[in-house]
Image (cartoon, rainbow, N blue to C red; front, top):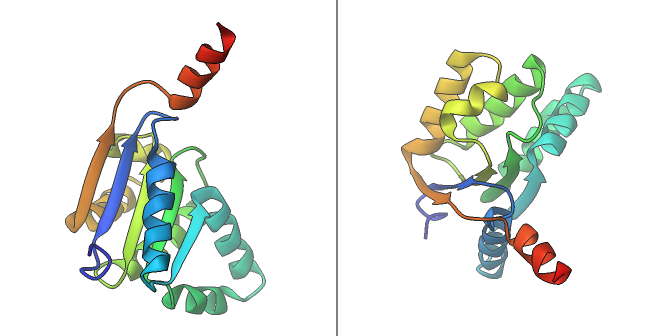
Length: 154
């Protein structure tokens, strides 16, 4: 129902705790219900946006995004990007605001997002839009991958 209400889901916590797993499961369920869904690693989306801008195809790329009901942005904060990339990502998220839904996974708390977006005003505006209509789920605990690796070692 969060997609019908044009709300976001933000999954924040340590690596390996299941954020991407839940985001993918929600995306799959949305597909089964007939929603148009896209999954992007944030760094790859920014690369695609920058490339589209440089070859004069940003409008076409953005037109493709207009058809999406839900966009999953995985690993927000794992890799920083430049001013241009940050501004392009901000534009996309702003266009989705109250029009479509986002699921975002991040290992960084919102207060640390200045690491990703070097402009503090842009960061504040972005976070403000994202959390306005959002379900925020905070993950704690040990990495499932680490626990699995340690159990194999014994």
